[in-house]
Image 1 (cartoon, rainbow, N blue to C red):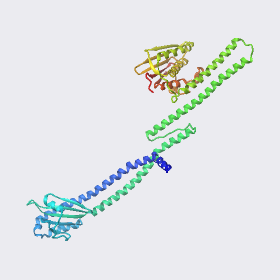
Image 2: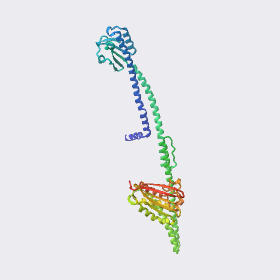
Image 3: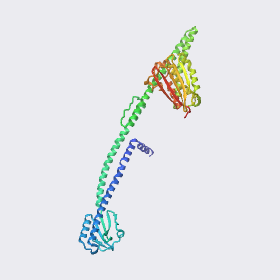
Image 4: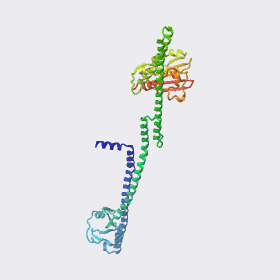
Length: 477
């Protein structure tokens, strides 16, 4: 039973079923209610029109009774014939009552001479303008006073009872036609709702199918859905996501290949150098030093690759924890520049530091050091000899800003959106020569985002690059 209920709930949660239910509720329920209101109003209108007609005839009979003196001498063929004719036309009965509540004429001939005991009749004698209408099943009874306009008195009462059966039959016929039309509309709306819900759910099925194909390793999937703007937007976003995943996968494969090559090459070099040292005896000291220096350089290259890999894992936004301490950003930048000046001096690159004010901020010093060090080190590596690198620090009441500007080779405009991606390298050959692994800017952006900050890039080829980092002074988890 529980499993059955689960299947029912799953079925009802389907967007297609819910759209179908909404269509039926919004399209048919108001239509049915409106139809009932209209048909009932039509039926009431028929009865109301019949009552209006009877009132006109009742007034005519009253005037005829007064003018003929029928209430006094009870002798007027015109009154009798007129009453009989009207009663026959409307399939009803007309009774004339005098001031003594005595029936002086009954078109059925059943109550002549009898006394009428009726609340409506009594009220007619007490009110000159009283008209009383009672609906009795399939009959309508109209009670009207016979007013003598000369004496301004009520001389009698006309009681008119008429069948409304034919009116109800007419209304029922109209209702049957309306119900047939409603049934046809229900079928059309149901078919339209099924078709529309199917068309609405089809793109989602395509997305689900595409996701399943991707989960099985097919990265060539592309969506090309049109129609609703939201569906087109989902299609475009999905394709962008696939492009990003494909690029990430390609970059990751390239990175694995590059790292394998980079690790394999120094290991092979060290093995050759070590074998050479072991195979030859009595080599001069300077050759030993040269070989050991080469081995040290290869070890440093391997260490750089491994450190970048470890930093990438530690800087992962989903798993990283920020150890925030109120730190002097001025001192942090001075320490970084002190460590990097020897590297810049090797190529005669001038390091310029400009600080507009003392800045204290809540940061994770280790992660922020990695981020800023990567920016400054890249500005040195990808610069021209005898160039310059300018580091600027400023702050306002809410943020501090670090700008790293260089006179270097610049970054092509068409790849500037990719430089923050993991494993991406603008010039793979040049990056390998400088020891780059394609992780530096990705690590920098991760560190900045962990501090709830932002980083912007402006660059022109052969004219230099400017990175601007904005970090809140107060860290908000």
